[in-house]
Amino acid sequence: METRKIGSQGLAVGALGLGCMSMTHGYGGGDETESIATIHRALDRGVTMLDTAEIYGPYTNEELVGKAIRGRREGVVLATKFGFVIGSGMMQLDGSPANAGRAAEGSLRRLGVDVIDLYYLHRKDPAVPIEESVGAMKRLVEAGRVRFLGLSEVGVETLRRANQVHPITAVQSEYSLWERGIEESILPVMRELGIGLVPFSPLGRGYLTGALQSSSVFGENDFRRNLPRFSDEHLAANQRLVAIVKTVAARRGATPAQIALAWILAKGPDIVPIPGTKRREYLDDNLGALDVRLTPEDMAELDRIASMTSGDRYPQSLAKIAER
Image (tube, rainbow, N blue to C red; front, side, top):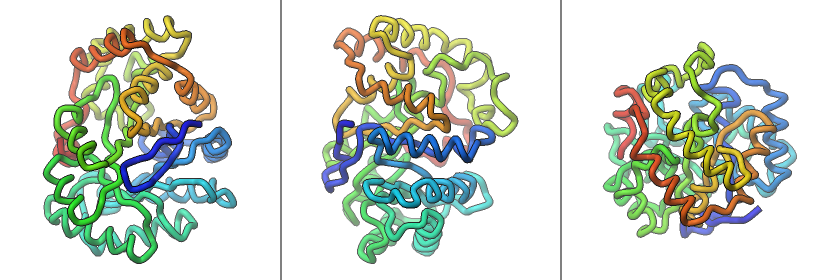
């Protein structure tokens, strides 16, 4: 697999990572055996970056990833995150220095490793200056518990202030054919500062694959039930976007998922998407994106999609904890 450098600090990873959240969290129940087999298949095929977080579960996702990499640590880039009060869901933030240290030690224990390769602040805590949060993360680097630092869903001012405390290697943010809010101001500053982009939900939480047409397919614990963009009204309106993706896919002999990922990969060598799946068949499909080459005409056709998207990406309760 092609290797890409995330940021200017020397972190090299496979061009596609693997988001592990759905294996235990957010999208209904998971199958541990199949999830571990999916992680193993990913590693066998050249994926090096595995993305998890303390809050996924909570805790169970890191435990699963730790179990999967036991005996296979070499070459794996482990990314995890902290920044919430455990037990509050994603409703109460805690970016305090005390929580940074506590969470890191817990993550290290659950993952079964001595060092976290990429440690993110999951969301900026408005009650804690970013300098204090990143200062605590910097001390973890100095102590040899963390190698590189990242931030998730932050704005330009936060990013600049954080980078003055310690070089930020990566920003994780939602970025896809139908979600391009970072392009106007955040992405240019990231490139100015030498910070890489790790897009989550690059397949539009599954919608851009063309497989979702009604909210009736969502299980009781599937958090997409609560996202405005996944109401039946907006799902129906956004079928016109999927039609464009399918048209390009047919032209290139690819699947819609492969087209959506190939579009992101073509947006720059400093971008490493982390499509999430808990099944080997979908992993194999995603990895096929690495062989797709889009023409300038394809890219222009796909670029139109974001302006046509119907529905907000988050309800207000979640939108307020993501800077843009």
